[in-house]
Image (tube, rainbow, N blue to C red):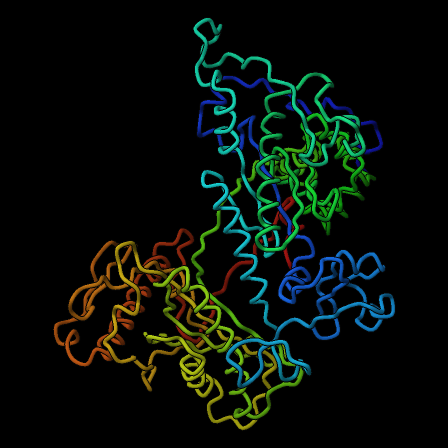
Length: 606
């Protein structure tokens, strides 16, 4: 049966009832209002054509040089000067060079056997090389670090390798009170005390702050003056202008110190900030005032909005015969929930510019590191696998050592090797990763080679099409503990020749990855215990195990830590809400398939 609701009726601004909220002293002076703070300001800062920019900076090229980054025969980044020639990432490298004879094509760095670090080689081949994104990760971390240093009281959430959300609410509040100190005290004659409205805000000069989106659906580009004139300024607009100042300064610093241009969107929440960040690129910033939200959103094809495309977008378009945000605004909340379930509330709110998602800094502590290679030519002989293991080991060595520069006590508990034949389920082996003074390709490859031999066994033909090597259970020591090197004697500790602890894939890897164990505390004698941060108990080696060769003691302690982690995992399974219990080796649980309902069914991968 067709729905009586059709989205072609005219939407009105009555759908947006929170565009000019009354700001009170309580709002300004409270520090815990969260996502409902009417003074909330969020930005999304995006690095322009990031991979291409990284290569341009590395090669010290003029910004006007048209450059593309290729991975094998495909393009993964196109600089803005190259885009002026009509080049896009959909082009093949040969076609791109026809469009722009002066185009500089840089192949992404790759690992190859025998090299400890990735390089830019003349002849790259997917059959012998593996792509490296390490340069881009490092440069991305530099930019994120600059964001955090510039805003010590703000929140920075890395959204991807080339973009980050920044919550300016607290830094802006600090600036507001600094510039307008009379706001810090509630006037004695305030009619409602803390709940009294703030006095009228000053006029705002938007000059040099970026492109300002205006209520009538236009922007400030080309205007002689951007001084606020329509309807009077609001305190939220003052907050937006301060955030724009801070964002501009940060972007200028990134450009001057690192050489990267960025584009930013500044609005009242994450959804709107991301939406307007790409309004004018590159090297720009756009401010979306609350009054401008309706006319900015109305003409946007809703299926181009993140989360509103795909199957859900198709279903909405078909159900209500609509294509734009404005079309969908005529559909009531009751109607959309009756068709798509109660959780469709977020769709209803998104269309009205409401997003209650927090900007939350992600932990810098990695839980795992993975290096993988899908092989265009399968490994048929077991002996041929060792060359790829060394390539993957080189990537893990570089990434772990990079991470340990900022977190010296970071260490993996486990090394895991996965291998897959065609579309079959992959199999894996894992073992405790030994403590060593220096993490090298040789150390990692030696441990992985043993796992490879256990995986392949006596087979003469293997037909492996995908290989993955990973560190899991990465943890760092607690405050006050010394670095890992402090646990070793003067001579380097080499990996043990026998790594006895290995498992089949059907034993859950999460048992090691989800434990939170602290490294052994430092002392003047050999470390023989550790404190578990989950049960807060000190776990120590038995008396007979705590003495002897330091190498063997370290290995016993590593094994004890791993076994204690398994203990917690077993407890979690035994106490789980669904009554599930650990699955014996070789068996598989029979679970009743639960069909998703409502809006959830549009996000299930088949």
